[in-house]
Image (cartoon, rainbow, N blue to C red):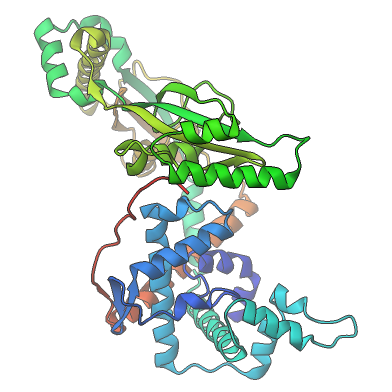
Length: 487
């Protein structure tokens, strides 16, 4: 069993990365030292809380690690993922402590030597630079005791997770059965019933069009948009760097301190106030990437409460090296339902499409009923093709599932599959065969997938057990941070 695990180390590493981020990464120990924060509790594990402040701090650190875009740290989805990671770390920490796991000195030393920052502290003669090591820890708010404790804790978690992953590896026999099923081929013919073929039979009345418009007003809304003013500060290649730095500071300070207008900073730094209409939440279409209003951070800030509701300048945003932008909302245009006369053509198109689709589905249902009575009548079906799960041709989703699950003892078999927005398609399956050749690479890949699923399943069960043991309790839902001007 251990040999099997070693052969599939990369596979297991991938599985484990889905479940565990070390709680004490080299410079992340602070995320584990704030059990006693007095902020609003989100979740409690063994009576100890994870707070909103901890989540915010961890989200900010993680955002910095992946590129320094702190805007992502404010998104609810990103912060929820961070909360899930912290929760998992705490549950694993509880398990490690409850099991009283120990780490040997040799294993700890080996683990430390794998940290790039630690390896860099070895001198050419092989000795360790203890002075630089202590300084490195001090710079990150750690002492040696905290650092060693954190690394030992991480190693315990790693050993625990690896031991769980080793306990459930998919059997070769199961892998072979599944691979055989995926290779099994069925000969299939298709008979589509598409809405476009029935459009000529549709002629909605004026009353039907008006009723549809009234019942689906949200489909005919113009999106909200804003008209804005903005200023751009660009570095002059001939200008001294220190001088530009001072200008950039003035730009940032004045746009923030005198946030009710761009005019003071524009006059001070001799900048032009430019204007732009029709900016939506998705940005400004038809402009180059380097346009000031093509920057996502600028757009997000403009649609924040401070800019949108209070008409304040957004804080200065560096959109490129040596380029700073500030902007303000002049007029906010809320979303509104367009008049019927302006969208009459689109209303008719949608009503006609829906009516034609109903006719197509009805025709497919009628033909399907006929085939149940006379299975040998294959008139109208297209050319036969051989498909399998490994080679599905143009079959996807439920169509492939239904075709591949047909009973081999009852052929020919007919299947009706609905295609929302298009119509329906009938499939005729009249032969089943097993291919003569076997693709060893495909078999190997499928075996690895089965092992990954088995490892995930085992780990999920392990986490569920310790979640119950740690008495995990949700106290408050995670809420989005208050939105303001971007920073």
